[in-house]
Image (cartoon, rainbow, N blue to C red; front, side):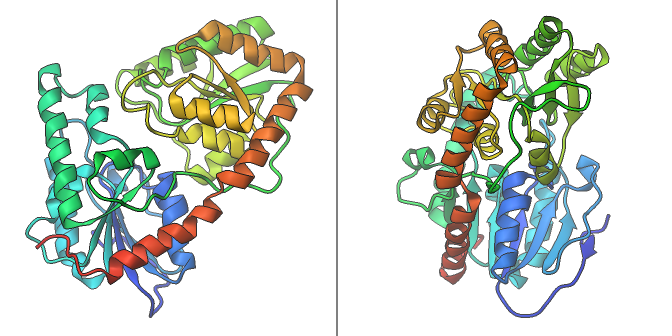
Length: 391
């Protein structure tokens, strides 16, 4: 795929944004299915540079106003080629835009020395804390890399605008920055929860990336025990890619038919697959990277009227308790998770009531429709600013 891989229906006028990621899947929910549509709806032109080829994804037939560009993917220790690829795109295409939106910390230093319009870094996570769970990093290098990440954050705050995906990230930075929460589009009337399929099977779902720290071993055990205890009338469906050692674990579980693993599914289709589920699982472990962040999967379960079963991370506790849309179980507690799912299978009306409460809460507080205008305003403010990203 060439650098200008696909262009369809570009129109004149309006502002122009160059959106770049070398880490995230091209169909990342926040980037492709929330932020970019918000800009397009506001009349912007968007060039979207993402690792289409390296993810094995064909560039989409883009809607009017959107151009897609292929860059290399940063994965494991192989990150320099991706940074060079992104820098080439920034150098060649950045000056033709009003603002550049970066989605990965490794892209911050790639802007140095380039003449660019104002640059925004969308901070998705506590990147320094995330270093602790990167399997490709030797233990002895983790403190050094975490310190380097903090340095990148200080550099970014001096040279570009920041956008935070969670209000808890604000403490890492010296000044105030706009917060655009990582919410989702909440349907007015989602399917009723706990409804069996044509074969009489009720689904427990897990949506999102699968890793050891996100509970892959618990998921496999949950899948096995649900199947055994229900004689196959309750099954676990995992929707999302597996990374690192979790990939082999999931492949083996699928081969043994302990669960149904769909792999990566684009956000719009993945969300539609949640409807009617008996329960939605969040099996995240208690690690620093997860504690300050709102688990997006919980937001998505609530939005789709699916009852939540979650481990008690602080933000998960807040969401579940305020919404009344689920229950909390101890970290890595497979037995309690299975017991709750089976209880709802025996009493689907109870599950449906929990799902309705969660959906009502999501409609009131978690709808991306209410976040999109704030995102567009932040981008407009950045485009109007005098700060330049690379010089």
